Image 1 (cartoon, one colour):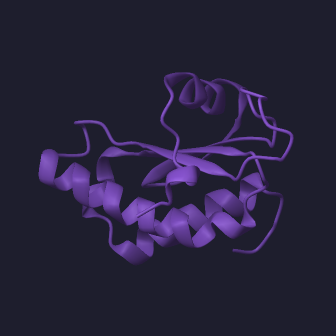
Image 2 (tube, rainbow, N blue to C red; image 1 turned 90 degrees about the vertical axis):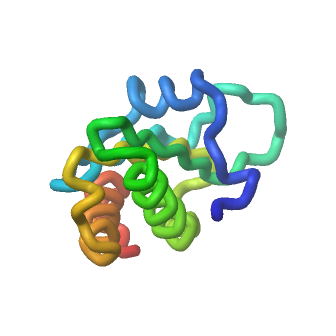
Image 3 (cartoon, rainbow, N blue to C red; image 1 turned 120 degrees about the vertical axis):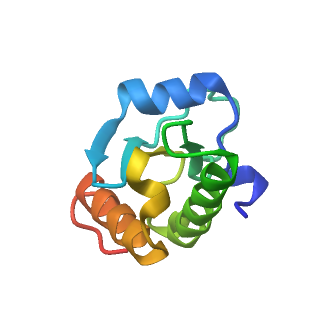
Length: 122
């Protein structure tokens, strides 16, 4: 489970990450990353990186979608340390994500983040 301070909840935050951020596609997922600028600058200290997930009905039934979300949450939680402070990440699962193994999802996520972060190893 992602810590509360690392979750994207607002529709505006999802829209910011998807529309203004960079995108990297892989066979089972697409990762959108919006840089360290907070769209709601209320605090002086930088916010921690925050992540959200989009898993549509095209992925499968409710059981399949929840399984994919759980796997992606766990994978992103382990990679929060490589994300810049204040960044917004949206991971969108593609229709084949339910058939992918945990290791395949991890490889896809690592490759997408490496591309978006400019070669930083996760």
